Length: 172
Image (cartoon, rainbow, N blue to C red; front, side):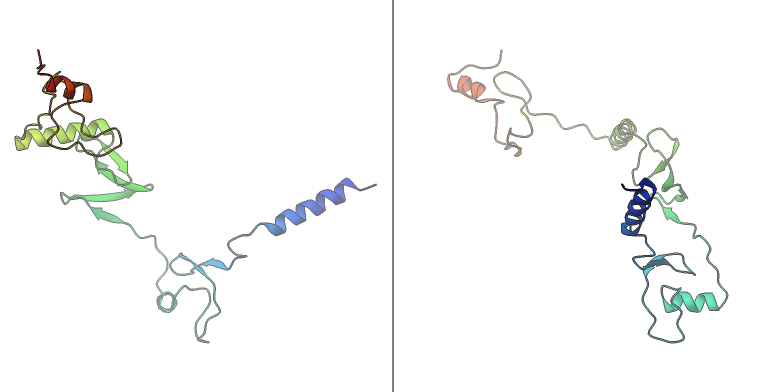
């Protein structure tokens, strides 16, 4: 009869030996800049394996210590965006509220629409008129059912309207 404690210990040791950690794969953290790198035995006897590069080792030997770098980026309009969490602190041009952005200009799709409408109104541009069917007056779709763009010469919304136009029927 098997002892359950011995069996449990054997299974546990087998499972823990199979899991790889970063250290077991040779991935370590640089002592100076805190970036990770694959450990390789240094070629130069003066070089230490705790550093990712000669530059980091020389900087550390000269007395510099690791300090987190404050990342700042510039927005298109010149304002500086401060780092916040995983993104940047940005003021939404649609609603003028500050939010954390991972690369988006506005905080929501509604604000993006509002921003674009305001921008178009400022430029004085009118929205492009949609093409309509000559027979029924419905809007001609921009894309065909197979996903291709509708040609500019198309004047009817469907094959039925095209047949009606051939027979001489016009829009009421």
